[in-house]
Image (cartoon, rainbow, N blue to C red; front, side):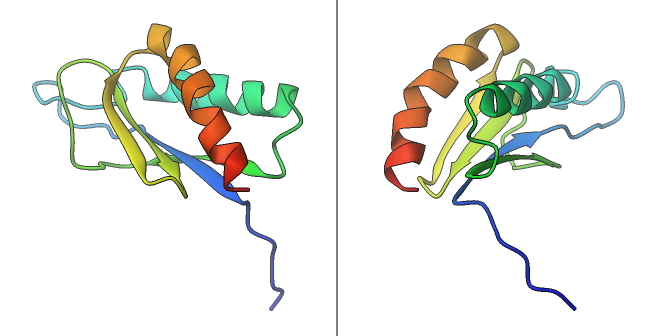
Length: 100
């Protein structure tokens, strides 16, 4: 058994998939959001401090967008559309950096 180092912050993105007639974050471009966040964090050399993690349901499924949670700031946003993600990330990044 080996002890591992954990990141100082995490961004959780719902990629839950449900039956076609039900609301689900995967259809709300959750996976596309995960890939963009990972790329952007790596581009800024923050990938050792901030990890992006796919999740299943976070409890706030709505018809559009996905759910994105930021830890350790305990901030959560629902109905996040891909085109809004960059602005959300820019507004939350200073809070995450301040806590790392």
